[in-house]
Image (cartoon, rainbow, N blue to C red):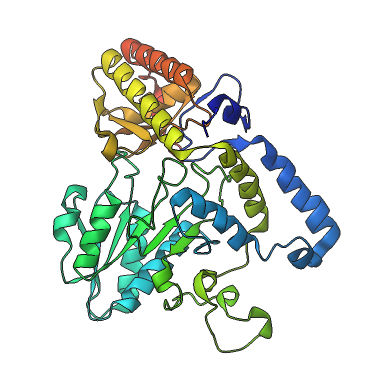
Length: 398
């Protein structure tokens, strides 16, 4: 299959006059999503009422959609389930790994990890006490830091600021060699390039769906548990819907078989409906084509910006094997520069303290958009157009 990216682009609502380079933070709306959610609201919730749990198969949505995610992250069928938020799924995975590796007290991560993941680890360690601690090292030092004291390694595959990509297979192999478990956060991987959690040796993987998978703001998260652990793991968040028989209303918790035990709360039906619609786009996408197009776009952007904007410093790896699907540049006035770009229709985002971040999604971004963004950024930098008071007013979301 050869991917027709013009055809995938036509399946998204893209506002006129906007070059959208922030799909790595929030994907744009698939054209079919609004109708799919409207049908769920009117024909299902409206007409079926509570009968929708059976008649519209709402209760099966987390597993049904999870299987579609599984194909995008290289997971075995039946080992991914949707629900809750990414932070909840991180906590579930961490608590499970600690319980599975008694006698060890260290959770290892890197300083480039997303803060929420680190907060979850800090909170878990505080709850457990007994000497449990989170240890963080520089991203390039993770491999050497994995030793026999580590219970679990928790890594986000692609650094949310720099776009640096970790080697999943190498780190997983080292963790297992040292007797540790490993969790992969795929927030900036799923839908960005081919991911192989099974081939890469992941014990657990988690991720969100509102970035490259385009489920909309607040879209549900997913969790993967490797088959070797699926019937052994004891969920720390033993929710009603992770029970073996939820409608038996047994006062004692009994975990459901396999991945179903990682369900916690009521499925977010409207968000899952939007995600189901969004995933239809992927039926015509070859992930190797996606990766090739992504690398071509990011290479093009890097070359263009470096030629035209010498005061911006690249922080994203040039090495393709170490790059996700975003490009980040550093500048002391990064926030104001990004606001000036947004005012001219080029939407990226800013990450403290000084990073301008741009996401590249071939599903709807091509060479024309890249060249247009470079031209506008070049003009803003050459003229100092960013140096206006209104561009320095910090909004709540950056």
